[in-house]
Length: 118
Length: 108
Image (cartoon, rainbow over all chains, first blue to last red; front, top):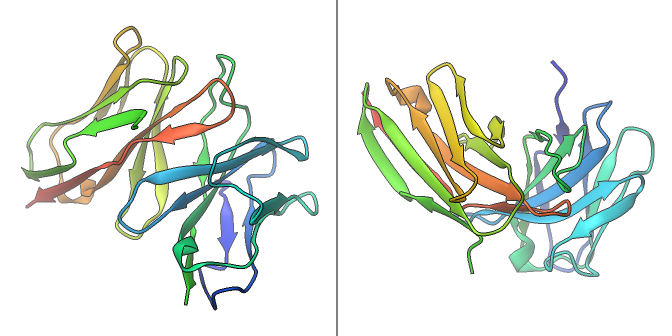
């Protein structure tokens, strides 16, 4: 059964460093998402991506963050100049359709990358 | 401001009990997503529903669009059902709002 994969499973970095979290969505999916879950808190939407551009982003997704689909398979989240409060689990998800305008498509989640900023 | 509210936050049940988790939302379109988060952190989709009721094994999900309320029921609960159950709703764009989750522990 196809699945979303994420690498690395755990990333430790020093404050101020840049990190790139990688995701391989399910191959025929068109919509890609990044979510964040700070320990003990709820899952938060960061960004959605469709047709090689951001379709929606939350207030959390500021200039520190960027997303890219560098090739036909990978979907990356870059966090520049990491801060202590960026420590969280980051989940990637993909779906074969968008959520809005009356349509609703199941999202498939990756296993997550635990980011620890020291 | 919480767009998605879940109750209870924590739930402990004896094996075999019938369990109900509730979700109310103030935003979103006419659909809702129930997710299960395992102790290790992984998230699995359980249901997406836009009306009525869906059943999968011992899990049943219902939704009332007019009242913006959904319930997740687990029949004959088992210790392996222990997890965090999360409801999520999309807005009219491509953004999802998540509830805080209900942490379920089923005791043998």
